[in-house]
Image 1 (spheres, rainbow, N blue to C red):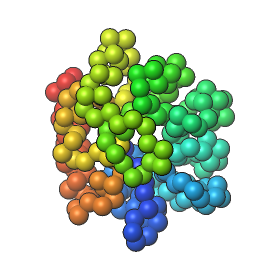
Image 2: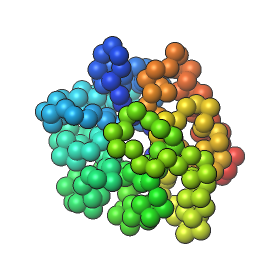
Image 3: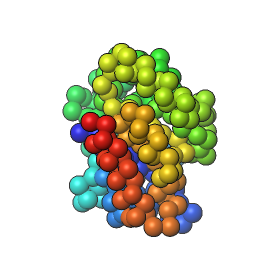
Length: 214
């Protein structure tokens, strides 16, 4: 089961990615994507091992961004691949059939590509400008999401689609009403004054809207 709320790690002003992940788990997050850029693979592997251990303590899932070999060796629950990363089919041949694999999309054509590749979920975005991405794809906004989700429904695509990119709590209801499966956030949790209240509110939004649409 793909969670409706994904937390994507980022390094806080004080501490490391692990500091941020532990704080998110303490606050109630259940789906963690370890996204470490511009660090040696050895460092990312150590992060993955430590993050998996703490995720298991909380009954949460750990998804590793970009690195199939690290996800496999660390024993992570899943892997997320960007459009410029390894193709999903090739990654699947490396990590096996049991590992969750998500893939990024920016257009409806990308969504068709990810579905054909056999991705378990799709991260669609960016919703708005975000500093966490070095190479930012065209911003979609609500209008872009509405257009793409309309095509998704026409094609009968059932793969869970997660909105991503600069999303704040107040954006979630509007996004979910368009028919997306869930949302992924980073700074909205990392920098929240009260992470537990923020995550509780986000879960209320994604689950309430999903139940209403069911």
